[in-house]
Length: 271
Image (cartoon, rainbow, N blue to C red; front, side):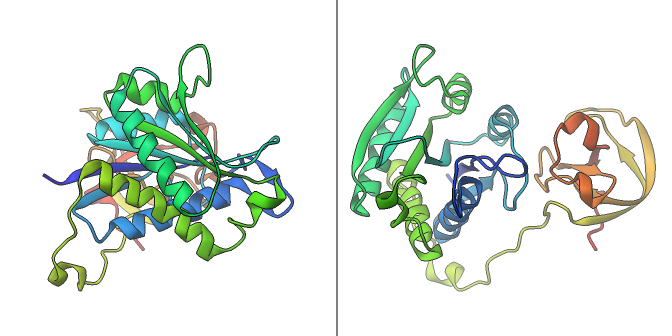
């Protein structure tokens, strides 16, 4: 059975994460996450991204999306700061599967030459990360990886190029492949041109009397709308997409003020 993997590129949009000089965490996270997704495209799995561009994300939203998609595993990609060096991986303290994935991931980080700070349990008393806690409650093994410190001169040397971030992303992919026991796709499938994402944040949609819903699961529409809109984040949930009025509102928080509502994906006539 094809496994579903949720990859969360931490931060984004107005939230840069850790910053040190030209090293901006949200950008590092995204590059590593995209590399992980690309590597996994050769394997029998479905990958869902929290974001594919520089848009804002929220832990609650990402965890809810993972749960709705029936994700088998959740990997949050981050980079560290505020003193220290090396890599570490967090997992929810009562989840043995998440601990096994954390162990696999830390070994992949070490294989790239990074020194290890170890795997660390997240709990209500210590390292209480929502990404670990919420996914554990939803029955999804989740890890939060911190590969390097952006404010450490030695650590910056292993994340200072796209090629090095690609290797980092592939480390996540290899850990997920081993953890899930993924099989490589047949060569004839690998030779096909990779499918392009059907929807993307900021993409124009021209609607013609399309039903507008208050949520992805609402049964009755609020009203029908006609006109040109933008996809808020391009994330497909229950065959619906969020829309917003203009480009300046794409990915902007708070969601309640910047999202017009939800439309059926079939009504999104992309430009």
